[in-house]
Amino acid sequence: MDRKNIESFFLRAREVRALVIGDLMLDEYLWGRAERISPEAPVQVVDVVREDIRLGGAGNVVNNLVALGCKVSVCSVIGADDNGTSLCHAFSGMGVDTTAVFEDPSRRTGKKTRVLAAHQQIVRIDRESNEDIDPGYEEMILEYLQRDGGDFQVLVVSDYLKGVLTQPVLKGIIEAGCRLGIPVVVDPKGNDYSKYRGATVITPNRREAEQASRIAICDESSLNAAASRLLADLQLNSILITRSEAGMSLFHASGETLHIPTVAREVFDVTGAGDTVLAVLSLGLATGLPIEDAARLSNVAAGIVVGKLGTSTVTPQEIVTEVCHDHRDSDSKIKNLDVLAGIVAAEKGRGRKIVFTNGCFDLLHVGHVKYLQKARAFGDLLVLGLNSDDSIRRLKGEKRPLIAEEERAHILAALDCIEYVVIFEEDTPLGLITALKPDVLVKGGDYTLDGVVGRDLVESYGGRVELVSFVDGRSTSNIIDKILQSYA
Image 1 (cartoon, rainbow, N blue to C red):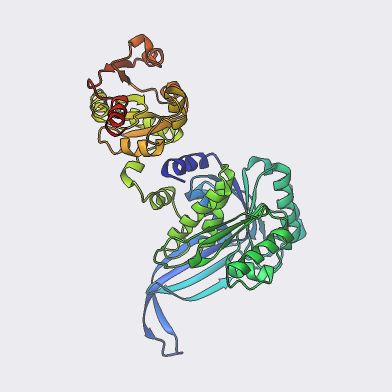
Image 2 (image 1 turned 180 degrees about the vertical axis):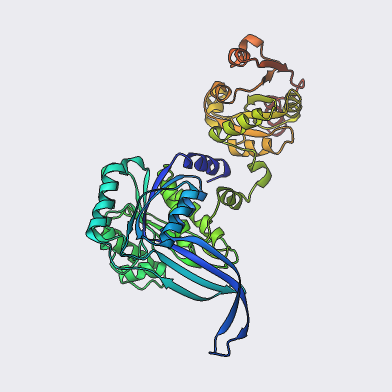
């Protein structure tokens, strides 16, 4: 995926409603200095200087989804205690719907306390309930799914083996996904994966896949064997196995396999990386991304989050920045229309005058550059609509373009006079003009005002059309003819 498609993905993500179902807990971090040994026992004394409480377990999946921009509801069973109150208060502050978070006075809301010094975890203290929830609470979860499941585009299952995701609950979740035609994405735990049978995709790490398949994974052959067994036994569409420094491997029931190498970076803490993978993969499937692209994005996100200390999240901008190494400057100017429309509306709100022009710009030459510089002078920001390869072939014949659309887009985006480039497939730019509503529409001097597509629209809301002459004797056709004459 390139930058413009990733940006469009995150724009679509804002409309997604995701339901996270699983074990909720709090992660408490005590940060301090360890500079001496206790006189009472051979242990370090930690002088605590900072405390931090974060959402843990399925709550960290919620946290990741919210950070990625989507709307989230959460379904679980917690204790009727102070930790449960803190957890729900945190969700409320994030705008997360907790209608289906049910309180059971007989349970304890989980809390994991980690003590850290010198960027190292020294000890972890767990306080929790992990027995299965009572049948009455199972029924409450299933009734909620039956009533409200159709409101969501993805069901995200985060299993920490703390008793919420019982066999009946998991069966109900997967059946609901099948009935509603929405993906069920599971981060599994334990040795018995039969309870996940029929899910869309599961995301075990290598060790978990070994335990569940009962196949020691030591090379690519054994990895394939483990994945094939799980796919067949569990009737899954896909399985994504995370492999730490080896990256990820995506296996399909059809037999296709994709190995995704890890992004090299310093690792501070792998806590919560699986939650990040689950969140990004789920959001990708909810927006209609091919699972291969969703997996690649989740791999990037996991690489970012392990470079942070403690249970962390990743933002859309961090992912976009990480992906876009090549053509970093020009890449930032190339947008899909859905993203660009929002940018242009915001710029208009700031009082900036938007100029629009369009063309093929195949084999860029000085005539093009002078034309674009003159166009830019009519306003504060120039948007260029660039004909796609297919539209150029329809306009100019099968031998054109000489330069592919992505290359042309990057060449044009490198010009200082152009703020944004958008590729369009249609024969005319009317759709772009309708969506962007530029203040000034610029065309070449070989046009007449009556022949300018979009003129009536632009003038209808107070805009204007400007005609700019090209430099005499400078054209792509002339350059092609000269090359043929010189080298035929």
